[in-house]
Length: 148
Image (cartoon, rainbow, N blue to C red):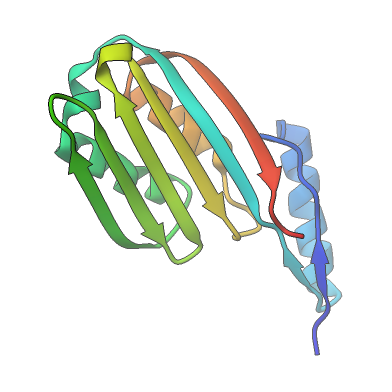
């Protein structure tokens, strides 16, 4: 029977930390121990320069699908809802957990999160992709370890 180990990972690890985590994952796999890392990253995309995408339901849906691809996560289902007079909420249900977004075009803002139990999820790339996609000038992010 395999043991489970929970590993606390800081928010958006730097390149060296990411290499260290990968080394730990490889080492633990050699020991035949399963590593369970469940990090939940929340991030706000602020000061979005081009607001129409924030109010475009199809654009938001495609962003969720592509963000999952960036992180090499498996999309099971995507759903969105367009609010009146403006705003979109959407989520991608993943085999590894979920990505969601809630937009406020009137405030040039999108609030997002990514929760994954995949050990080597590339959170940083997902955030950068979404920041670029919505032309956000500022990102506020934080994370919590949900492994325990």
